[in-house]
Image 1 (cartoon, rainbow, N blue to C red):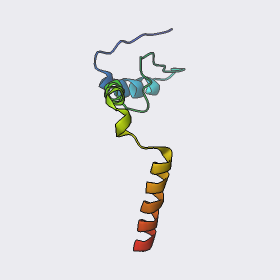
Image 2: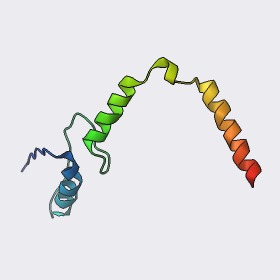
Image 3: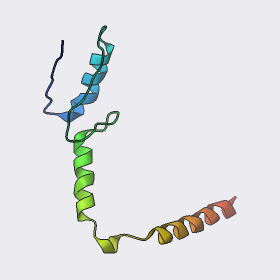
Image 4: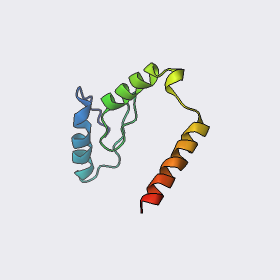
Length: 82
């Protein structure tokens, strides 16, 4: 038997998934969604991340060289504090 459940509130998915997994004889619980749901992260979180990603401009970004330079500086700072 295959059962389809459509949820209006995606935050209920975690509860429903856990409930279904506890039922004896359930073979699998799968999700069809615009966004992949990863262990309790509601779909609206992905929507907000997508909105943020669309709003980021080129001047807001740094190069990978700048990133690693900053990371090395921070690692040195943290290491020297010990």
